[in-house]
Length: 237
Image 1 (cartoon, one colour):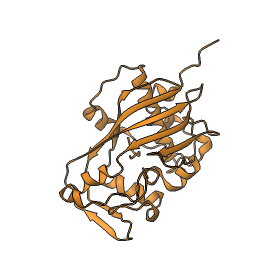
Image 2: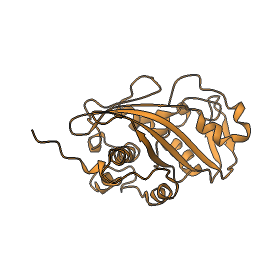
Image 3: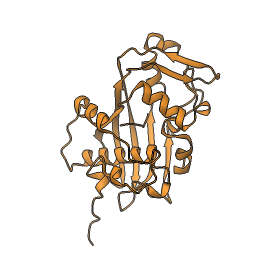
């Protein structure tokens, strides 16, 4: 039996951005050049090209691009569309259609004293976080198991260069002045892949309040814990 070939999205972090005929949210593929530069400058790991760690990192980077910027699920090449679901911290599985509707940030974040995903639509949520952290880089720290079930630890980071402005669970606008420090969060994800290395399930586990404690670090103890399980931040790695 011939082993399945490794898809381009596991070898090149920008593979899906070459899909020029896809339905892109802003008509053309996004520009990740600044984010990739921050990744190269700030990463803590140096994975060998073609290693399991490198391929898992590339897969997730391409998945994030598709989830954030491809508006037609039929154009998502990184997932097994018939079986794909996403969950956070043991919460209910979410479909690709749900993520397309609410956005990657809202699929990850639970309601709290600084942010409420129910009051921030796809566009508003992306503007909030991309304004605050324009180059939110992402890396794989360690891979614990290989396909078909891939468990790995990750890191997401950037500098808070602009004020945070969002709507909280009480419907109030919240503003936190930029401190120009780093936002640095970590978590663990378990991904189940099919025989073609397409994602069937993504289960992510992390502290959903850690980012907000770091945003509002002078008042971290007052940031309310989320009332319900929700779930980094994807976006812009």
